[in-house]
Image (cartoon, rainbow, N blue to C red; front, side, top):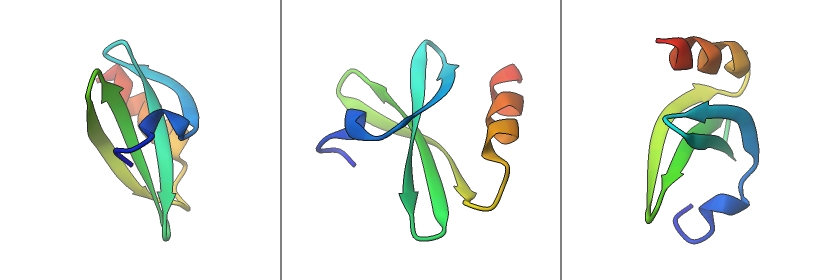
Length: 61
Protein backbone atom coordinates (compact mmCIF):
# COMPACT_ATOMS: atom_id res chain seq x y z
CA UNK A 1 0.00 0.00 0.00
CA UNK A 2 2.94 2.35 0.55
CA UNK A 3 4.16 2.16 -3.05
CA UNK A 4 1.08 3.61 -4.84
CA UNK A 5 -1.51 4.51 -2.19
CA UNK A 6 -3.25 7.02 -4.47
CA UNK A 7 -4.02 4.23 -6.95
CA UNK A 8 -6.69 2.78 -4.63
CA UNK A 9 -10.33 3.87 -5.05
CA UNK A 10 -11.77 6.90 -3.29
CA UNK A 11 -14.81 6.49 -1.05
CA UNK A 12 -16.28 9.93 -1.67
CA UNK A 13 -15.73 10.85 1.99
CA UNK A 14 -13.24 13.38 3.36
CA UNK A 15 -11.62 13.35 6.79
CA UNK A 16 -9.59 16.34 8.02
CA UNK A 17 -9.30 17.58 4.43
CA UNK A 18 -7.98 14.26 3.06
CA UNK A 19 -9.89 11.91 0.78
CA UNK A 20 -10.61 8.53 2.33
CA UNK A 21 -9.53 5.61 0.16
CA UNK A 22 -9.92 1.88 0.61
CA UNK A 23 -8.15 -1.34 -0.19
CA UNK A 24 -9.81 -4.76 -0.12
CA UNK A 25 -7.82 -7.43 1.71
CA UNK A 26 -9.21 -10.95 2.12
CA UNK A 27 -12.69 -10.40 3.63
CA UNK A 28 -11.88 -6.90 4.93
CA UNK A 29 -11.83 -3.35 3.65
CA UNK A 30 -8.96 -1.17 4.86
CA UNK A 31 -9.78 2.55 4.91
CA UNK A 32 -6.97 5.06 4.91
CA UNK A 33 -5.91 8.61 4.12
CA UNK A 34 -2.67 9.76 2.52
CA UNK A 35 -0.95 12.66 4.30
CA UNK A 36 1.99 14.06 2.33
CA UNK A 37 4.44 11.15 2.69
CA UNK A 38 2.53 8.84 5.06
CA UNK A 39 -0.42 6.48 4.90
CA UNK A 40 -2.69 6.53 7.95
CA UNK A 41 -5.12 3.64 8.38
CA UNK A 42 -8.33 4.96 9.91
CA UNK A 43 -10.58 1.89 9.94
CA UNK A 44 -10.71 -1.81 9.07
CA UNK A 45 -14.15 -3.32 8.47
CA UNK A 46 -15.53 -6.66 7.33
CA UNK A 47 -16.55 -6.37 3.69
CA UNK A 48 -20.15 -7.31 4.48
CA UNK A 49 -20.67 -4.29 6.72
CA UNK A 50 -22.46 -1.21 5.41
CA UNK A 51 -19.27 0.80 5.34
CA UNK A 52 -20.83 4.01 4.02
CA UNK A 53 -22.94 4.41 7.17
CA UNK A 54 -19.95 3.61 9.40
CA UNK A 55 -17.78 6.26 7.70
CA UNK A 56 -20.56 8.87 7.79
CA UNK A 57 -21.01 8.31 11.53
CA UNK A 58 -17.23 8.41 12.12
CA UNK A 59 -16.84 11.71 10.22
CA UNK A 60 -19.68 13.35 12.15
CA UNK A 61 -18.08 12.57 15.51
